[in-house]
Length: 177
Image 1 (tube, one colour):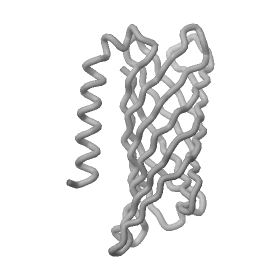
Image 2 (cartoon, one colour):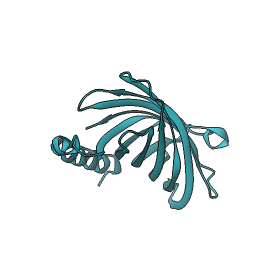
Image 3 (cartoon, helix red, strand yellow):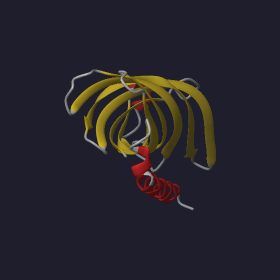
């Protein structure tokens, strides 16, 4: 099955499940979300690659009356190589802490950072090459908080240990239900 088609199908299915549970999630400190955006390969890792894209699912947990929150993200990133048809797929799962600036308004700036596991896979000529390594992320964004739905835009730098030297900067647009 085509990886991109499989990823879209999974994202849509899980998104519908998250949407269906939105009413009960509104009464819980945990909220489900969907995210998508552009992935920029950076540093030496980006020298032979083009911009890519990413799709993700997340669980956002607020601590009542606190500026601290937590998030678990799962995402699929696809980045193409310059000058050929080779693509690198990066699957990730991150656990991050969020520190929100209490503005008392609809727009809330925040900082986010955490650790995760990254699995990268690419096909070069006739050989498959796969690697799973730990990494970290750090960044920030803006949340637009409404009663039942929150949207956000953020940028996070991801650095993965291992031989590939993966360094990516996803710019993400998301929604929490």
